[in-house]
Length: 319
Length: 307
View 1 (tube, rainbow over the protein chains, first blue to last red):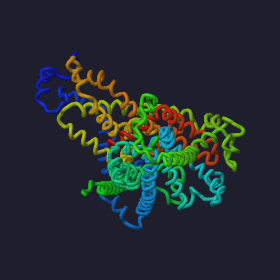
View 2 (view 1 turned 120 degrees about the horizontal axis):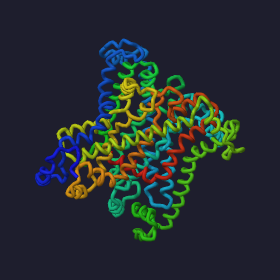
View 3 (view 1 turned 135 degrees about the vertical axis):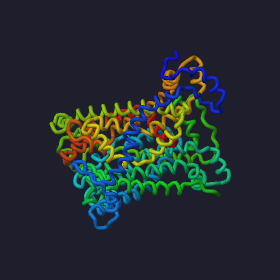
View 4 (view 1 turned 90 degrees about the vertical axis):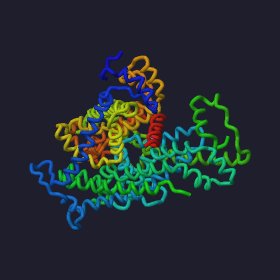
């Protein structure tokens, strides 16, 4: 039975290892064994995660065009151009950052609050609850391509369902949902909420079910009404879940791409072209990879600052 | 019955059939009439919301069975008249839009990706959960740290790396790079840590080595986690959009989401065709969802909470 990659001597180590450690974890193995288990993953991880992080920083220091032979070192030039008002790169990048901010600031609050309301309702017990849960979650399993193509149809100015029903209930029925702002933002945010609401709701729901019922009972005994129970039991109980959902939602919103690419094509003009969209186009369509890499590092710094802000916001507070 | 009975208990009751789950004791004698009223209201609101919520998907399917003229007609109809599969026949046969080929590409890519994620993650996670070795903390720390690295950092350099490997415009480009899943390792490690060590110790006492313990004891116990990870990886890969549209150029090598964008730019006003394409791209994930939704939703909830 001892036929394995582990060197002999394993057997000898066994009793000592069991006695000699305070942990209950078995620690008997050859020195090579863990690395053999890790090797397939670490190979992928090194080539497609670690190396690109370093490589990307290196690319950002060069005038790097995939299609041209020379890739001269330019130091921080790509970054400085991003910070120099008036340059073309400055304009397209910061316009796209502005689009990203508009989308994030408008979609995140909705994606935090609406799914919470849905989860609060779903947390009540009633027959058929799982069916509703499934209905609200279903759009999330569809890809952004399906979602965007579908909604571009529904939001079509002339033959779309949305304008037709708006008209039917007496509201303006000729809104150019995908070709004018701010309507395009309403469309992009609305579609995103419809698409991803279920994801956040499910995570909230799991969090709600972890809040001990006794807390609600004692709050009721103390005379707390529904709102007070929500404020003093539900919200504090959800804090770890809330911080997770906030973080995930912000990251997803900052990474918005497909909705804009397929529904508005970044338009009108470049109004809804987000930062990721701009980075992909600069790097992978125009092959200005040095510039695009610099953009991606600047965006990453922003994301990290934002994450720190969220951590700070949800830190454990005394009292 | 009160609206505020223990959700877990009721859920368990629903699974097993309500007979063996005794009705929870009523903890409030007052307010039962009000409770019933609220229940009706909750239902009404929920049903209306659910209908609005799901109607876009219904309309997508309905439109895919309409003629070109009816798909662009006002007022919109909810029942195709005449009912036709013309749109499907058109997209399946049109030379510029090999939808069946895209379907095959997506299926192959998503299955291969899920298989690689599950295999490499489970192996690595077992080493990290159950073995002691020099450098363990560094390896685990590094993997966890990359969970916080935004994917945008990887797009440009990975394009170049994939190019160096000669994988551009091949399915390998959409199968392999995204298989380095830090989430997968983290997810499986959490699961392995929850398995009682005693089971493995028993196997070890019977003379099994580390590999045999992993293969015969740990893996069989991990089926739910492995299935959840496979499902999530499949979904992610099947639906991936940004990466495929930039690394796959030829019409016949595209995946369905990338193909759908081609279909849209080529047939901007042929909504019958676009909806048929969207349905084809949705069917596998919706079928998976219908059969495994409970599993999937719980997988999402669990991975979210531990993340």
